[in-house]
Image (tube, rainbow, N blue to C red; front, side):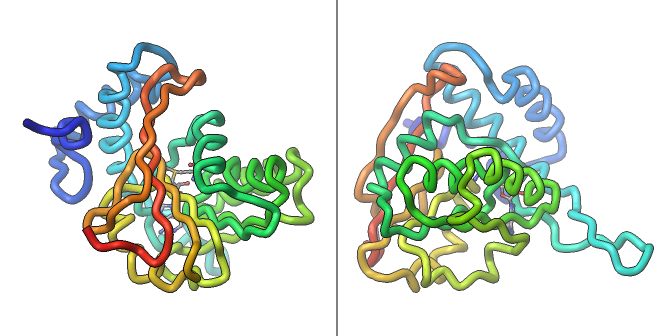
Length: 232
Ligand SMILES: C[S@@+](CC[C@H](N)C(=O)[O-])C[C@H]1O[C@@H](n2cnc3c(N)ncnc32)[C@H](O)[C@@H]1O
């Protein structure tokens, strides 16, 4: 029998997505709004829609050289925000405290690092490849009044040295989590990694927590790993 995760992501999560899946998925994602309401059973639809919507990450981020727009590195996954109560649970699961340096890889609107700094007194850096997200994140940092402790950088997460961080937060895709393993292995012992909804094939999580978000009414899964990573 297929697991919830497998049934949610097939077809269309990751590399094997087909064009006809994209149309259907786009519709599903919109229909779900990426699911603003509904029951727990919608979690499966939302996760599937999320996977499919994320596969739309084909639109290149533009950079400018002189006056000529030039396609730059393409985002590997589109922007979908983690609901605030799921962010709170991720940070408490990782036991974030004032000694931590939290990196959010693909920071979207910056809510994860800004919340971490405001609620737990830590420092944080959010990284995103998309300049629009970087602008939004910097606005969030101002709004949360944590500019003294949080920086936002426009950078490709696959080019980062993660070793300064003690906590890594992720909301990417399963195959992107796996691609990050060599970088995650450079974290200091005792560092924590939390991922919204997506596992990391080949690495044994310490905890897997499911919760229904009050914000969207659907089920979310949170994975926690602690370094050194344990092979499955
Ligand atoms: C699903 S969103 C998650 C946003 C935020 N972390 C959250 O949980 O609310 C993924 C983000 O990753 C960014 N992204 C995708 N590929 C990236 C890359 N290679 N380097 C940096 N950011 C990337 C996207 O622009 C998007 O904002």
